[in-house]
Amino acid sequence: MPVLSPAERDAFLAEREIVMRIAVVRSDGSPLVTPIWFLHEDDAIYFTPREQSEWFACLRRDSRAALCIDEQPLPYRKVIIEGEAELVYDIGHDDEWRDLYRRIAKRYVDEDAAEGYVQNTIDQPRGLYRILLSRARVKTWRMPLAGEPAQGIWHQRYYRPGSKYSHEEQ
Image 1 (cartoon, one colour):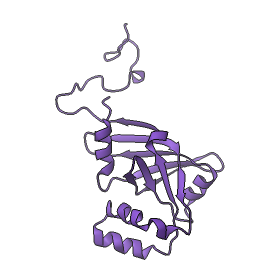
Image 2 (spheres, one colour):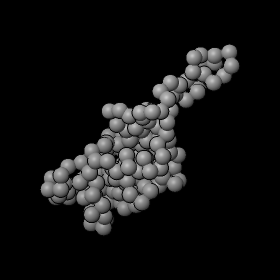
Image 3 (spheres, helix red, strand yellow):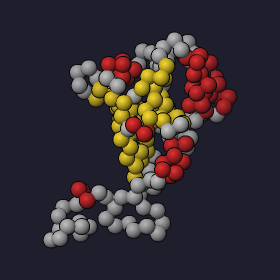
């Protein structure tokens, strides 16, 4: 399976309107997955839970998180990030990072609507988290592009020994 080059990964993460799913661990050990907006800047993924969100409480208790950022149309680009979520700004410091929040909103709606969204939710305190890619486990992949081999694209662990695309001898 082809992986994304760092430049391809960064270009994909900069595209508008791609939603990220964050997975966190509840206190009982069960997983919680939530689709959210994000921003990729300075080799980090930034995201903003509202004060009363369940996944904010989960991150406060256990900072481990997994992020899935992918697309539905070909070439099915995917970025999976597993790491420690760092609380950059806690509740009550929203004014210090509101411009970053505006940049997040502008990735999903036009500029006027983004400002309206920020103003309409300004009374909903948020925290600001990030996961540094340099400190996380990052995996990427996509389907082959034109001119690339299209067979045997999955990781070898998915092929039974001796099957058509297995690299193992029969």
